[in-house]
Image (cartoon, rainbow, N blue to C red; front, side, top):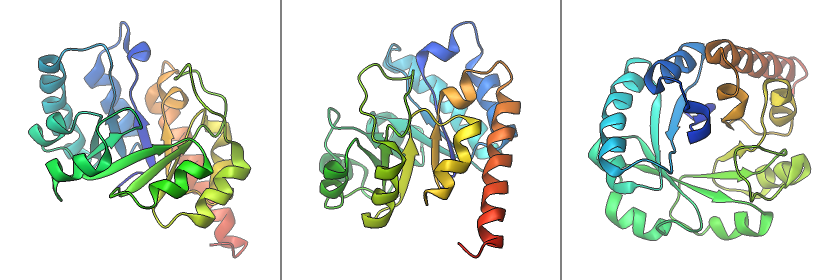
Length: 215
């Protein structure tokens, strides 16, 4: 899994914008994984777009993850699939996917995180760490809960929710090494520059922690 800088797509950021060009620019800037997450497209369109994104992500050595649709993830030979509480249960996803995909799951509280430890998933998306504009009905957990999540989870944690370039250092210092980002990249006109800023902030914070003997 290459979830260090994990870009999550969203319908509202692609109005009047070319999907493939935008994703490629983000990959050029340092994105290590892309989650294809669209709610208003038909299955055929998603399949055709995913085929092309599979090619693009492979060219950059990045992972491709499909939100919700394990069938599409398998059909395009994606690396992973991500599901939430209202999607196909992880146990069912694992039955369908076997070991062909890694499986991600969303937890919006420490209680949900503890329950998710029992599930057949490979990583847990935990948040929202900050207020976010990507989802209307979200639960704010904050940095303290993220620290506790890192401490108690046996599975890798991906921090999600409102992570902008200027907040990267806080998330890294809280102990998290994987950042899921949507608006922090896609809300900017220059997505390559935004991705580069996040990558620089990530690397700078990691160097600081290393010098302080905290790694």
